[in-house]
Length: 306
Length: 194
View 1 (cartoon, rainbow over the protein chains, first blue to last red):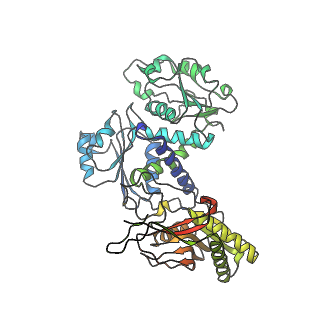
View 2 (cartoon, chains in turn green, orange; view 1 turned 30 degrees about the horizontal axis):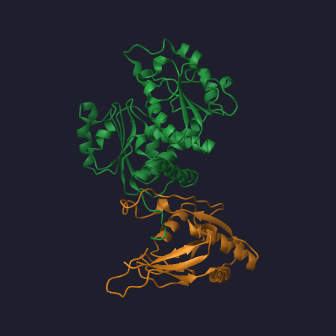
């Protein structure tokens, strides 16, 4: 089984992933944080694009499941010598990996990888395409914090244009019955956004009645050589940056990280108890363990056979 | 569900009741007495049920120990999903794994522990449970209590306390139903024409 898009999963499969994640949260609270579930399996993390937390959390997730984990980064590998994605995957295939966790700057790269490997491919972010494991960990964080997801209201704020997180989250959140709206300047909305069927607001006031404000990172590094979509970060921060004073009682703040303090949110809000940012990171490890476990290890409900 | 071996006379479909509510109660009382008899100090014991029906049985045994021996051992629950040895072996036929909670609200280190399960079959669940238990500490001793031992062991594992020994064929099925989960206390042997 692969995990390429959040659309690959049914509501039931997502809920089942979450109950497995509960088990792995408990494992993380033990003195020995490791279980033998994937003993003898090989997990290759292929990261063709920069990442710290996603790579670290997949690496730790695999190790805590007792898998053998290998990391390959674009720089320092033969990719920097011009090897094609297909050839890199075919080469790795000789080692018979069981799981291929892949991040790539091109949309569809993970889907393509499934054609050249027998391993289960997990999409850890493909360009501006999707980031399904981020969506699942965000949903799991919401479930831990609020319980029932159905009927919740979430505003996704900011750089939707360059965000694969936004793409996966809009569809994943709605699949689980969450009411989603987008907020931000029209220059940060992708062309065709109106076809996604979510309400779009320019004014940050539109977050007043939501349960959660989900801030997106302003992706400056993707603007190189192009006309910037906002005149200045200062102006963006003044109009769309979130501060504790703008939060209503009961509202929570999420962010996929890494955060730009002073841009999407003020530094004191990042450290506020109403921010779930570190809670998301903790959820991420448990959810990624559950994903690695589920792609390899479906087995029956009956427990009288072994 | 069971399948009948080749060359035998067909048996009728359906099930044979092995324990009814009253016999199950008497069986559990006897098991509680045996556990107490072999424990230096009942109050220092821990009964750990294996998810799912072992958990309820551990609670009942703890209640009975309190009723007849004046001290209730601490109880816990253990899920062995992450310790199974058949990952990927039976992939195709099933959809999603079901993981239940593990909760050991006491210090495993140095404690006498009785693992409790409903049916003992190949012994693989028990092997996994022992491995899981040791991730929490080093118990002084681990014993095994099962409501039904149906034979067909594939590992050198032997129960210390047995409710009922039931000779079975490999293809028959033992169904344990408990009031807390299933509305009735009953153990039955399911046999079905192949």
